[in-house]
Length: 213
Image (cartoon, rainbow, N blue to C red):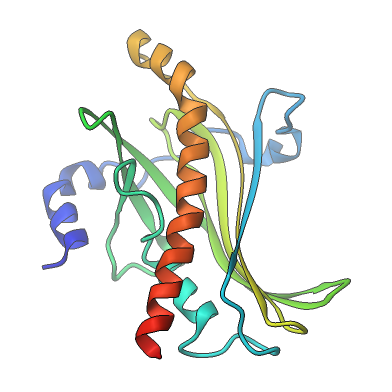
């Protein structure tokens, strides 16, 4: 039994609470969610090892990054661990996120995959091959919003990039002490999550490429 299966077994009752929970914000008003209206709008990028020009190659940088992304290995485990049923198709995945703060406090939140991305986009620099997914926050989460993770390869040059973008806002936090703590530290933890995720993705892909060689 691997670590993910152990976590699922340990927290199965908590996990099952989120299967039918609704999204905790109005998705239809996404176009209104801007910095001017009080939402955080984030975008991050990290280069990954290049491949030969053309479509993504098997057993190479793009494919390894896909595996890391699909298995939710990239978040810093000291902050976030994703608990989900491996056999569930990615497009139907619900995750229980175990968040940890100061190695003392643990909190649990639910998210649901809202879309899987597998497409070729036309850009000024040529075809961009993109694979990834987004997830949205469920009722009970301290944040509202959606985050998207993408592996991108520019076919003309072979350049590969890990891209994260998100829109988010603080949600309902009943406990006043936790509400204050999240107001003070929440944004810092968001940024830490993103930056560490970029670094871990870079490290994991580089390590897998070394193993191939």
